[in-house]
Image (tube, rainbow, N blue to C red; front, top):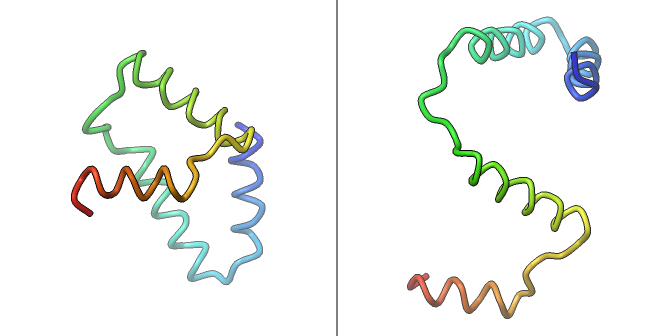
Length: 74
């Protein structure tokens, strides 16, 4: 079991019973369902790169984001 999952389970233990049941239903749903899609190894590499950049604080500026939204007509 990963550390993150252990932390999540510990947090859920502190919830009221109805919320614990909801969390249990969600976990069972995730554990028993088949993924409808998957990422290629290249896409996974891109996700890892983006997460590392975010962790280092390398985020787009507001000006860069405004330009991106404008490019897509938003």
